[in-house]
Amino acid sequence: MKWVKQAVGYWCGDIISNRCMGQGVCIAVLDTGITLHPDFDRRIIGFRDFVNYKESVYDDGRHGTHVAGIVAGSGKLSDGVYAGMAPKAEILMGKVLDNKGNGSVNTVVEGIDWLLNVHKKLGVRIVNISVGTQPGVEKAQEKRLTDAVEKLWDAGLVVVVSAGNYGPGVGTVAVPGTSRKVITVGALAERETAVGSINAGREWNYSGNGPTEECVVKPDVLVPGTNILSCNGDYTNRWQKPYIMKSGTSMATPVVSGAIACLLSKYPDMDNVEVKLKLRSSCVRTSYARQGWGLLNVGSLLSP
Image (tube, rainbow, N blue to C red; front, side, top):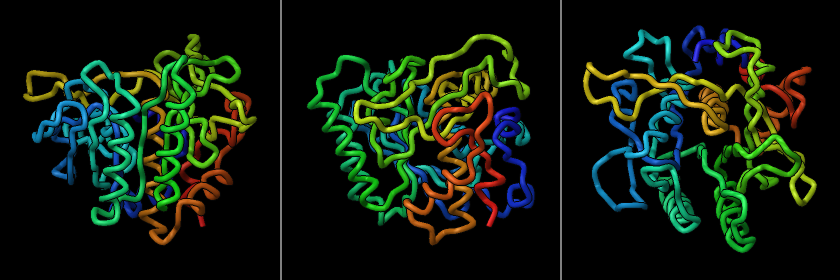
């Protein structure tokens, strides 16, 4: 995470002083589940399983734990080196994907309906959805999923979704990232990510690209998403690796969700529309971040 944070201008005064680290903010994650990794420091405030309907907290796909670590891991087992973006935020996990990372529109919509019912009681401000449909899904199902995530947005939640990994061709953003309401996150092409990446110079260009069928420019914001180290969903004892590497727009999306949690730590009265406008105005257009609003810059995002 260190080079990712450097790339997105994370180390600003508000972060260095520990003033805006996600404290007071709850982030809901819809994914494969979550492991009780030490880096979460008892900050997992709830769990619901819409796949196997188990009551115990678990992650048989290991994807959700990795995503949650990018959002809000404390870096406890790495002396903070692999801390997430908002290491003091709380996490609410909805398991909507199976052990292979697959799911149905039905299970995702179930998870969304659950969040609509509990978000006020649990203080959820942000929903991270590192999930998208595969090519060929029926239009009616795509619309159903899009309508569901837009209900979250209309309820006042900041909804952050991945652009999908079917790019870089035109019109390859995955649903529900095509929604004009939500914040859609793409991953920088790795050959263009020169800031500290271990694979700088290689070709990693998979992120979904717009415009959508409705001519909406997507993704909205770009961040690194390739070879990201975060919490290992298989970690249960000190003989296993506490952190593993994964790539994709699924890994890029929680970088933005975590940055928004830091923003809401500083400005708790902001609504989701204000958050989106602040994010848009703070992004940086560069030669290697030309899609949407450009590259996330946390320092600018947190500035007055």
